[in-house]
Amino acid sequence: MRRWRIIEEENIADLVVEVFGESKEKLLENILFAFTSLTTEINKVKQTDQLKNLEIKGANFEELIFNFVEKLIFLKDAKLLLFKKGKFKIEDQKIIADLFGQKITSSLPIKIDIKALTKHKFKVMKDKIYYKAFMVFDI
Image 1 (cartoon, rainbow, N blue to C red):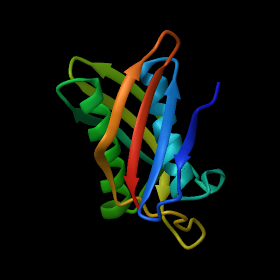
Image 2: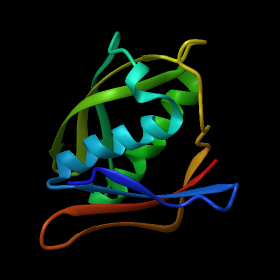
Image 3: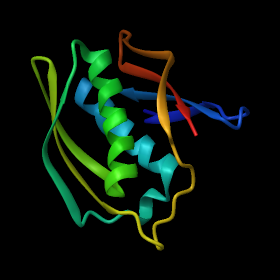
Image 4: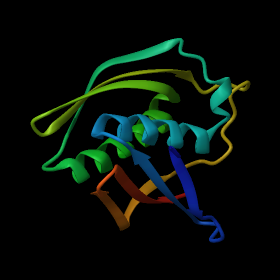
């Protein structure tokens, strides 16, 4: 199964991505993988830094996903951290995550600097087989 794909990249200010997962937790893993793959060369990301018990809250699963991606952007911009892997639990109206990655360095350059996730066209849904997240990033 495909983890994620770029839908549209012709507009130089936006990047449209669709991410897939067989479960909610797998969708979160694949969103993390897609975000880091877009941002840098993911095969170069080491797992030397850990962020344990990161809590993301939201009123529903769609809001949890949006807040999670916004947190990834904040961690990239404010803490210079990118993550390659994650372990996720979803409880009530929150995600509890352990993330594994490293700080951005000269040997781990930024390919695409994702500035924000827009609410425009943002959607999380489940069909018969898998969950899907449709996201538009400002770059």
